[in-house]
Amino acid sequence: SSIPKIVILGAGYGGVLTSLRLQKELNYNEADVTLVNKHDYHYITTHLHMPAAGTDHPENARVNISKLIDEFKIDFVKSTVVQIRPQDRKVILEDGTLSYDYLIVGLGGESETFGIPGLAEHAMSIRSINSVRLIREHIEYQFARFKREPHRTDYLTFVVGGAGFTGIEFIGELADRIPELCKQFDVDPQLVKIINIEAAPTALPGFDPELVEYAMNVLQKKGVTFRIGTAIKECSPDGVIVGEGEEIKSQTVIWTGGVRGNRLIEEAGFETMRGRVKVDEFLRAPGHDNIFILGDNSLLFNEQGRPYPPTAQMAMQQGVNCAHNLVASIRNQPLKKFAFSNKGTVASLGKGEAIGIAFGRKYKGRVAAWLKKAIDIRYLFIIGGIPLVLRKGKFL
Ligand code: FAD
Ligand code: NAD
Image (cartoon, rainbow, N blue to C red):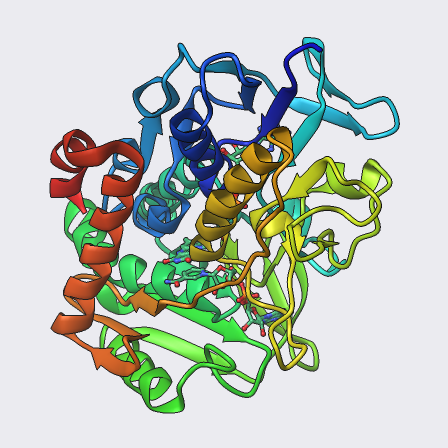
């Protein structure tokens, strides 16, 4: 019989971990593995809030895929997936077609705008290297514009929609960046506003209330204004409409209000909730024993029947399980059920400040910030060993 073909879509947390494990566990000529990704680099999504605000360079949030995978064992194809055709066992790329026996979908999420008018057109979101380059340049440009039109203080109002972890981590960085920009452009810091708008009755809904309060205090001291219990209803080139029709004028709206699955998944005919596939205990799409769905495109429930939040931590553990089950499938061995093991959550609040829960206890301030760094370095180590830690780790 011929060698089984494994195709992995997306070199994010899920796709990279699957690839790394497969290249380690598969024997020579046991399978033919192809990894497809839009860019020839992997981006470290969990670091993107920094280059978005301009407190770090985008270069430090990406790694060339050729530095991560062994190209003697895995074929890397730089291309964009345009269609998945489960009925034909094929994937259509912008410049070709791939057929597969096993498919792994790790294409990551997309920003969810819930149909709020104008958001998709006028707001920016923190999703990729390209999207954060735009945000960073856009913010700087507002300072330059203000110098030419000093009556337009709305150029200096920065609206962040959603106080989930992405919004909170981003405003922590932005608040650190503003004083630098004020110096660089000779702008009075009093004129600059960072407004974080959150629809729920609290920032970081569902997270430990004591740590949420700590985070809000840290951020307020750095100049952030919170509008909690206030929903964004509309977005236009001039700003946002919130609550019962109040307008907040701004030329910069960063939307961090939610994530959905990749549209290619529902277009392929899979049943989805917010673009995510409710996978079985082996991470397979229902009715497709040869299709595994990972990361932000998968939906899993905990013992209480609540959906797990989509995280890098989840995607990585899924990648490891998926690789194991691919090897088992090829060898006709029994599959292993996926079980998520939550190692905790740590979120940064800018330089030297963070909050988190790990090893069953709470952390805040400098200790939490160190923990965050340790987590980032551990990730570099997992995907690229000591050489990658030495190349990128010093920037984190
Ligand atoms: P991704 O990592 O999003 O990767 C998807 C890959 O697919 C990308 O390489 C992309 O280029 C590629 N791709 C997309 N479409 C196509 C296409 N059509 N064709 C080809 N390739 C394509 N989680 C944590 O656990 N801890 C954190 O500290 C944390 N911090 C975060 C901070 C920020 C600012 C953000 C935005 C998210 C954070 N998250 C964190 C969430 C985490 O980043 C995601 O859950 C995780 O990236 C999901 O991994 P994934 O493998 O599903 O997809
Ligand atoms: P999220 O869905 O967790 O948060 C979105 C927030 O926006 C919510 O608080 C929601 O109430 C609010 N919102 C929704 N609609 C709104 C509206 N119309 N007006 C105002 N507010 C509105 O999304 P996220 O923060 O991007 O996080 C995505 C995933 O990534 C989560 O699973 C999160 O845990 C993970 N993440 C983790 C970290 C970390 O661990 N350090 C950092 C970033 C993201």
